[in-house]
Length: 358
Image (tube, rainbow, N blue to C red; front, side, top):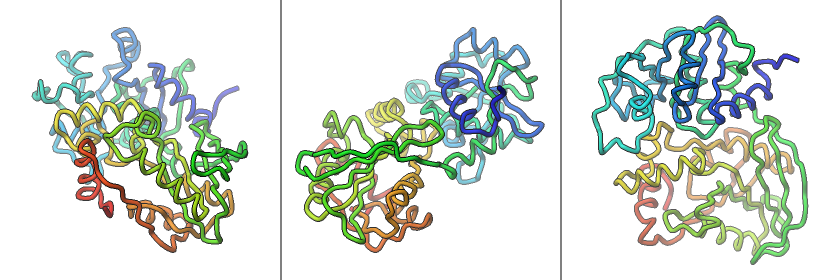
């Protein structure tokens, strides 16, 4: 049976194939792109991709701005920048442009001749969004208007771009989950219908009619390994302790590294070791400064019958996002913790560049 290009199945398959180093077709009416994740490309897979024409190197606007390509800036609304493939732009050179690990060692990587996106602008934006969804660097080889290939999954550009705004969740399981410092707790597991990662709601104690709620994005390095580079682990433990005292809900969202994924977060750490702050590290990788989707939190709260909350956060964006999607935030409750020598600059960046109220 053919898979509809705008279905959840097609989008999930496209993510899986891209992560396995396979090519994917992105459809936008008569305009199409056949794309391959740059960081997973090999000489053999790139040669197969280019059997029907030369592949541009497609970069996100953020990464293009870092390399000063085409004077593009994310604020200008450019969805992506296409670098024309010339004979000198081989696989090694392309990967160097896609991956910022050696930017300081070899800062001059061009010149980069760009191509107008034209009728492929929407498909190009969708390709970048799909790479981000796959937690890959948002850099792809892209062949324009290659003939359809029945061996490749086809995904609709509009459906990819609307993905975050159409998340549907199901409650899969609910069970008691005694926690250290909060023994009266239940866990509710949510699974997106698009095959994405599961998210958890911890209902702690007896929440009041306007419960205290904490949104916590997963942080393996901080929550589990005890990393001192961020404040995530201490924030999680202090939030659980506070919720145990007065009752409330903690939403544990699988959005590692502000939504860029674990491996890309570690890449950002490597850039921080070179002197970049957390915002600039994300931008150099080709991501926005914060890729998280708080629509998920809205859907989870509504599933368990919550429409008014007090929000335990220092981040005004969380308040704005929840209120924009139907959750009334009666109070923003501060949640600041002391800095340590390893995360002081990280917290300064949160305050000075991202508006956190620390």
